[in-house]
Amino acid sequence: MRKNVLLLLITPIILVSCLSKEPDARSIMNKAMKAHGTDVAAQGILSFDFRGINYSVERDKGTYTYERHLMIGTDTIVDRLDNDGFYRFSNGIKLQLADSMATRYKASLNSVIYFAQLPYSLDGDAIDLRYLSQDTVKGKAYHEIEVTFKEEGGGEDHEDVFVYWINVKDSRIDYLAYSYCEEECGYRFRESENRRNFNGVILQDYNNYKSQKGDPDLSKMDDLFEEGKLLKLSDVDSKRAIFEKK
Image (tube, rainbow, N blue to C red; front, side, top):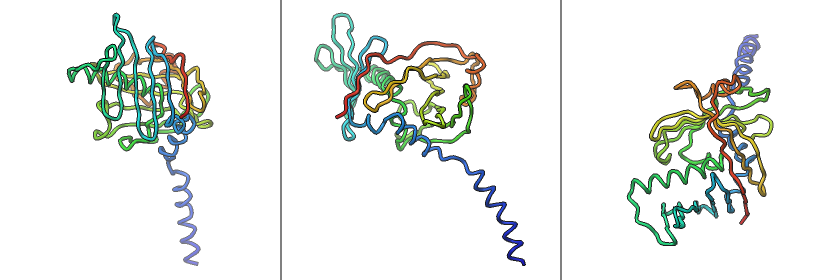
């Protein structure tokens, strides 16, 4: 009799524990990475134009090379970032740069590539993921995942914070918000559009917004977006994109 009573007491506790178990943020992000083709992107060459400048990223078995090609006056400039570091070439000649300038050029090149291929790299050792909630934007269900970075291995912008809205049905990232501090600090919200599939790699453009409030809660910026309280700043478009598998 005592055993039956004990069982009746324990069973509801087990049920409540099972029902309240939080979704696993890493599992959800892994599905998103798969849905965006990051496994395919790990072995190939992506090229695209952003704001009139050509960018490319080549990856092969852990090695990578990012490049930016532009003209400055009559000079052909190539910025290159690879496993060994950052370099700038002018008309084929490697330049000696002050550390401050090299850091600035490297950061801007890395930033364009990083955003163009999100969520590539969100499985790194310096990545911390936290499940925030399941939310609804424009009638669709989303997992809200917060991404922060460890100081060690997290890069120069390790203090940045991101929130991703991952579609429950197809695991695609439809919205993201982030905070940053460079020369000044700010908050941005991006709405994906013009999603394309290049040989299994997904690229998408974004409408880029900012909050009219000084310090919004990143996880609530989707609410501000739906309420029409965000100010559109720009279009973030990747043009003439090509991806070739290795």
